[in-house]
Image 1 (cartoon, helix red, strand yellow):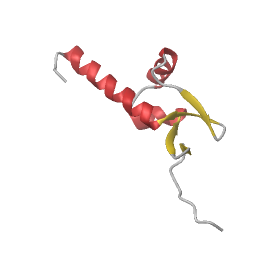
Image 2 (cartoon, helix red, strand yellow):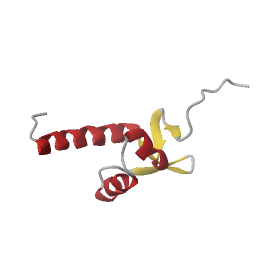
Image 3 (cartoon, rainbow, N blue to C red):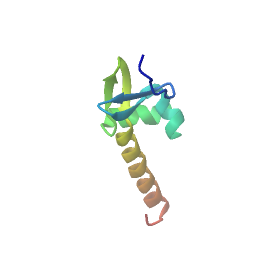
Image 4 (tube, helix red, strand yellow):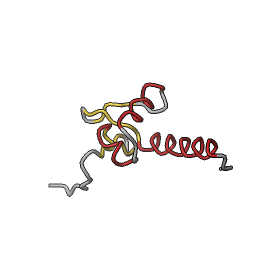
Length: 80
């Protein structure tokens, strides 16, 4: 029997890239579900099937959150 790494529920790996289940994105990213839905609808986030579950690449999610933080700072008048 091979030892296996255990991860939190909702985390997946595809070709060694981490993915997060869509249902877990709002909690992990401190977003509302409607924010996630809007990001998917506008194409800012892409849903992929991993192990039969809808998931978002963690790299894409981090990039989206960084872009969102910059836009938010610009709207407040801060220079990011």
